[in-house]
Image (cartoon, one colour):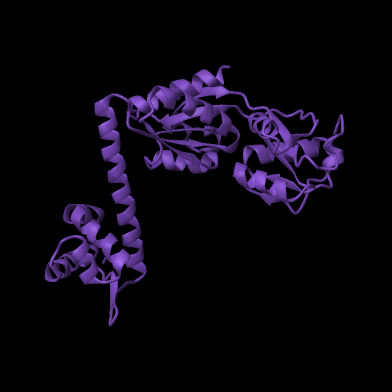
Length: 309
């Protein structure tokens, strides 16, 4: 029987996590013991205690050393995650004691990346020693990471959640959408483009049932056009740009901020297409009543300020 969470938490020690990580790196008890300045019998005893804690063997003993079994691979992966979280904990404590908040983890949907990077640039100029982790994903994925405590805040939309009351959210700005393409696209030099002109081209879009995808589907439906097939689906701005660079016939629906960034750097052009639908606004989201570090509050203020411009 797998031990309870309380049992694991009461018996597992940080030094045992270090041993698991070392065993994953060396594949031998002797190598792991040397790295941690342990005797081999001491390391063997510690491993026995770890396997007892989890209620199952974690390694296969071979002539060449120790090889993690599937459960062992899982435990080692989480040991590394916990080690990383502890390092982040220390970094944040140091930052708070110095008065700048230490480390902030922030999530962002693709369209709001330029807004976030502007805010981070401003905060970094004021607090150059503050560390920021940026996670780009869908609103649903970002909300899940907020739930798990992996993110301090996120620029996304709570409308995708079935439990929006679990979050505190602040309006950031409305999102205007644009269609971009390679600068060599056949329609790039047109003064005006209609949705019908783009119906036979291949689109880079978000996954089904996501707000921007639903908006595009509605645009085609309202125009009496069949929605394109053979789509390329991604939530990554970089993947979108890479695809446009590799194929001059592709088009993609993005936020106007992303379109301006691409156009300003000459990596894409904005097609002169007028969309009638309006996208949902961005929200700055945190866990309801969750305590926030000074650094997180500073970044939130910078995001809201730039959203109002």
